[in-house]
Image (cartoon, rainbow, N blue to C red; front, side, top):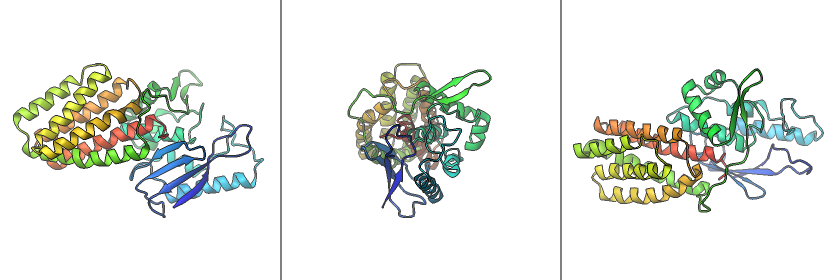
Length: 328
């Protein structure tokens, strides 16, 4: 199923407004398993996994209403609060950006929510975000979680914060930063890799919680401690891969270990989406999840170990999509 949806971004001197197409897995669009946004010029706006920033039917309806109104009255005056001069975005669409964020991996999901909103033009260059206390309440997350997400988006140049009477946090850039590698994965490839990781790494964690020896646990703990150092990302990435391979080895399954080795090779390519040198905060957030996984394996809790690993895997994907503003 395809919907032709007009992009709400200003087209400058050209009267034509580029269109976006959302290709969804379910015709109702109530809870699609995946969706990709593609502009007429071929630029891809990424995918939305099930359960994350869902393209709900009322959001699509309100978006189409807003578009139809702007088409019926092409000389309509833009919303006064819109510094870019673009067509006004409907209230329902705006509210969807600031709706509650649930589940695990809240820092990564917050980065993704704001990053994709910037990429889709729902948050525009120069626009001020709500105050932190208000925004945290809207997202139903803690101030600390919100500040971690905002710090990541500031460090990558998408947001900037100024002080003083007219200060606040503003959208700075609306295009993703350049990456060194031309072999970055597409949205479909990242989705498939994430699904494969959830299945393999999640099951490996569950088995490790039952089968890991004391030597396995000590090895994992040593890797977690080593990743706490503020070292270059290349060093962190080596330790990260060793952690996941050691965990797969602790599962006692040679096939799972072989599959994890394949995953780590593909993941190195995917991580180029985060830029040449991800922030220390991104590394800290990732390693905190490593520590929790390690603790649950040591506690012989296969159910929670699997759930924590799955959250870690999905959180990595959310972070990557958010840092690319959904433009994969």
